[in-house]
Amino acid sequence: MTSRFSGALQISNLDDFITPSQECIKPIEIQASKTKTGAKIKIEEDGTPMMLNDAGQPEKLQKVEITLTDCLACSGCITSAESVLITQQSQEELLRVFREKQSQCQSADGTCSIYIVVSLSVQAVLSIAERYNLNPEEAQQKLAGYFYQLGADTVLDMTEADDFVLLESAKEFVERYKAAKEGLKNQLPMLSSSCPGWVCYAEKTHGNFILPYISITKSPQQIMGSLVKYHLAETMVLPPEQVYHVTLMPCYDKKLEASREDFYNHERKSRDVDCVITPIELEQMLNENDVKLNEINAKKIQRPFGSQTANLKNELYGHNGSGSGGYADFILRYAAKHLFDEVDIAVEFKNLRNPDFQEAVFQKDGQTLLTFAIANGFRNIQNLVQKLKRGKCPYDYIEVMACPCGCLNGGAQIRPSNNIQPRELALKLESAYHQLPQSNPEKNQVVQTLYKTWLGGEHTDKSLKYFHTQYHEIKKMNTALAIKW
Image (cartoon, rainbow, N blue to C red; front, side, top):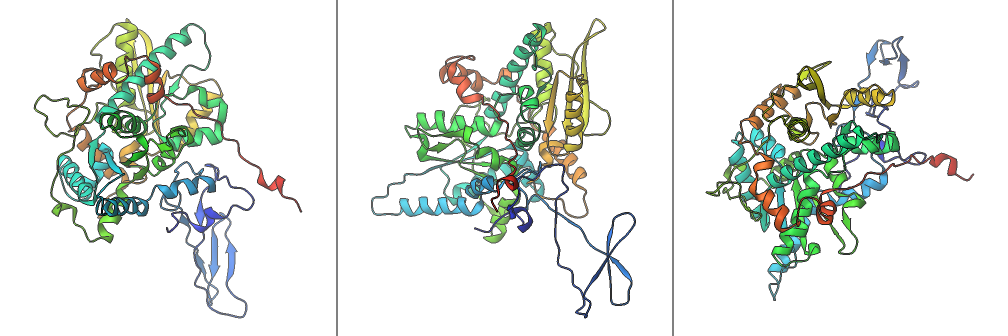
């Protein structure tokens, strides 16, 4: 397969770790005239490199920033070991699995040992809808039709996984808040953990200082992995390793998340998510195979876990709050209800330093009881970390996302065209997100039924196993010191 990293990122003779503080650039070819002296480089007072042409006039050199097609972690901390893992997370690998299944099913005995499940995230669906001028539900059904055409057995949406994450995160916050009031340290602020770019940055850059604050609730992708591999597979009398689980996600970092050792079942030799595909890669697959998504026959999303609606309508659901999933909004409302007996509170997140840093305060009888924030983008994340280190962070909970504008502007969403700015496109997708039917996790009967029937309750060993995880400090290796001359 063709590497998705630039050559600069693959050079790791001295140090395999690329810190987020470094500005990643890749070299470009300089078309210099073939003179006896060669091209001359002049550095201006502001540090700008200039090339002197044959006439002796300075020409500014172009600097090319590395994009997410070169680096799969927007936190800038990919290692070569991880690059090996994500070779399993490519459209080439996905198509190979589809071909392998087709070959098996067409064999003499007709036995298919691969059962392919595709899970569609709402943010990725909205990106596809915008790119192909479809409404969100049409895009979802066209995507289902496309994956069924390739050979998928089941195509799902991720509403139940999204709702489980919100509920588990909210319960975790309430427990942390009570523990903090009892004097336990490193409980608050609780930091969201659904963004793998942010988690990757935290593990590799701030280690054990920041990790105690990060929520241990899995992301929607990984909870969906548990639902597919350990509930759906069980109901179909299939071993987890026979189910090949694909997710369509808005972020390249989700490939790294799926490749984590924590989400690999050594006993069954099975990952919760086997392959992550992104909208950018999906567009490439369509273009390379000359497939027009608008002409694909629409198919229904299957609901093997049940349906929220009595008439089994095929709907795409969003959540109140941010387009990243509404974590801060839902958890604030849940905490106000379960800690202070306040329901239907007014929640308003206001921009502070910039549109990517927002704050909301819950007050009662003139007293501030909870202060929540949303921090998107690494500029805000780095400011947040510095406040934590100085002990001056005033928040109880922070929804943290690596990408500016959050998940709707994920690094693997289809890029804007026609001179539309990225933020403008993200705001357009956010508007579409908030026009979707809103799911209320506490009233989702499918979720409540799964708690009772599959998990045996809300606070069981099974729910802990399938819905929670741990994060680990990853120390930077000083390879240069290990070199023997």
